[in-house]
Image (cartoon, rainbow, N blue to C red; front, side):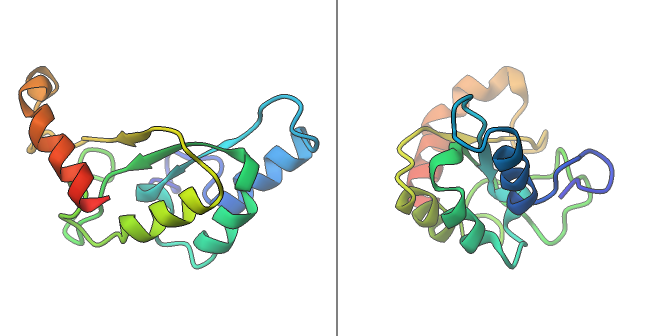
Length: 131
């Protein structure tokens, strides 16, 4: 969602293309992070996740609200927006990915960085029920 002002590679397809060019034989560990906030809109998302099979190194979750004004600090918690995170997660896991899910809490209205530890039980529940 920040492809106009903060990104070089704006889709999973572009990222895999680069990985395949720079590391065609998977010798150097070139891979991608599937970040639902930046990729949920892509009509090629699921075919490219399948293509990325051995190159998925991480999975980031947060959600998109149609009323978002700040594309960096306007993310909402999983389940509070419009992204079908469970469907994307299933596609990622179907490739064999068994790594961690990284929750991105980038919204100062939800919780300040200094208070995050007080919200961990709530955040864990949110991820387990919405991802």
